[in-house]
Image 1 (cartoon, rainbow, N blue to C red):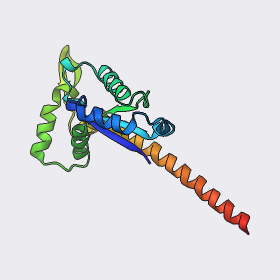
Image 2 (image 1 turned 180 degrees about the vertical axis):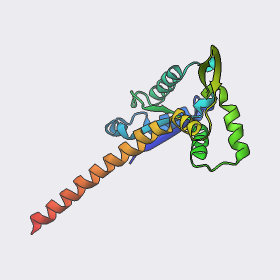
Image 3 (image 1 turned 135 degrees about the vertical axis):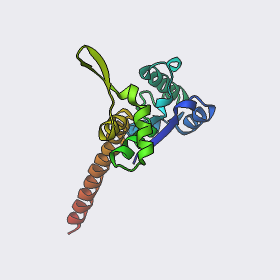
Image 4 (image 1 turned 90 degrees about the horizontal axis):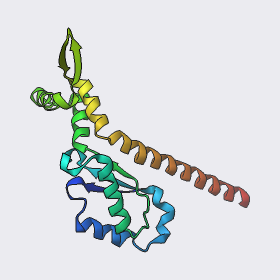
Length: 178
């Protein structure tokens, strides 16, 4: 079991989000034992501009908002920044599930940010990532692998362990009855 709150970067400070967090968590000290199962995703982090500040600063602001809205019931929130768009684009490139025109458009769009400088004969050139290399770069940069690892894999592992313990306890109780 896990709870995943997904915030839109462009509106994470909204009164709706603050009210929702407050309604669910404020005054609920009993929930503190399960906070390792509560995750916050900040989607659309790729919409960030220079005026918004750097990602660590933004994450600190989101964490502070969560702590304040939950009246410190969640005092150390786990916030993962994600770009679902980059994840989708990366997967489409990796799975070759994209038209040639769209593929060329992505390669042009990301030539600068993902191009690698190469010096040849005293000239600096940009080696543009294409196809699978660009797909891998976009997918990794999306932070979705971190979300998958943190939430899905850990939650599944914890659920598997709980199921194992519960099954073992049930088996022991039935054996005791024999």
